[in-house]
Image (cartoon, rainbow, N blue to C red):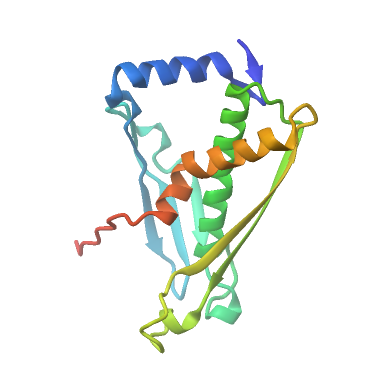
Length: 183
């Protein structure tokens, strides 16, 4: 096994080759099931993962996530806020994308850190100003990458690649359908 940045580079190549040969293998579906806990609180659990057309029920209720809002935003501050989860999702996806693509390019990472911020204007959420969208207005990501053998130009190319290949970033910057139904 050839590891770089704790990524099995051969497994990454094999996965890429398998998905290239059979695109269905590259299809995945994640699920989460949540229950309201009163106020702004939610408890959610992981659901079934479907990858390559095969259901993996081993993740059902394996992980639990709780969310709430800070007191300043009408919550009781008992858990991470949904906005912080969104930033965490982006940070986690950047981590996977950066580590894997650095390894594939032979860039050895000694360390890296991410700092993320997101701005929201409550006038949209509260319905005060219909011209203000209720979602985050901007997300900023600052990467601190320690890769002593990689010149800055190579790291800038890697960051551009991360921006282009991160599924969560793509979800945030590209309009998608979110279909909500009442059961």
